[in-house]
Image (cartoon, rainbow, N blue to C red; front, side, top):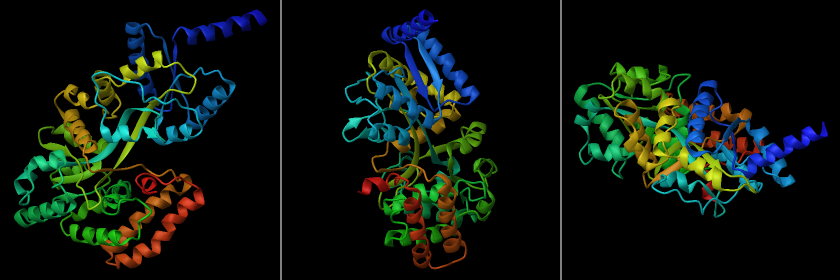
Length: 420
């Protein structure tokens, strides 16, 4: 028995010594996504000669495993994929290597995403996957652009594409067509709360939560009251914007890319996906960012080759087609085939490439997450639909927002965390 155990230990060690990559991931866990990854990694192994074992974990188990291995001085997991927030926690515990000397030829990682890969001067991960929310525009709406705003301004997300410009555009459409053709998913299952805390709040105040009751926040709420004169009244019943776009009840809509996708797939020539407008403090938007990291003590050579493969344009496009995450390298956009996916990918990458980006990460408030988003919805209903004084409402609810972070001990999300 002892000989057998010794043989197994030797086999495990040999696996590490001769370049086996044990790839631990909290992502790609659903059966279809896991099968996709297994097939792609098998193709990589066949061409590179590097054996890759794909291991799915929940975050707490992955954290404990890494901590135990590094404390024991024997790292067997030598590549990790996780959400950026979880990787920050691992880095704070000294579990991840500094990757700033790793170079990948022929790749331009999107600058906005690359910026969040660093903690205290160390690069703790390489960006791998992103998801977000953008605006979809029916091309007919471009015939009603306000003076001084071009189609290219909107598509590229220039400094002229502002919330004031959106108001003028929606007003112009309303006055020329007699219809309110701007819409949002404000229904019970819609993601309107994400727009409030992750998009328009940071665009006007520079923060999601810390400046909930600031003077700029009151200005933002007064702006929304004006904008909603031109928002389709059925918005309060819509959970997703694909059907209203296809029925042409709206020409301009904001939503998660996955919820806009059905409209763009059905009519790829009718729509474009574009960055959101910017506000006085920049262009606020939410990114769900997944990174690839190498644990402390692991050799870089073989894991770096897997990272190079996973971030190649070809693989990034395959991930978009099969799993729905968007590319993190500029070169991948040119590799996306014409059609709906290209329309969506261009919108996502144009948004994340804007120089005035104010990136928001969704707060990790655990059981308070629902109360957090409901508070933003409550403020919206009271101010915009019921006409209450915005200064009074935000003063009443502001302390409640801040208390949720104190009560749960949750870290402040970006961009709030960067204010200190």
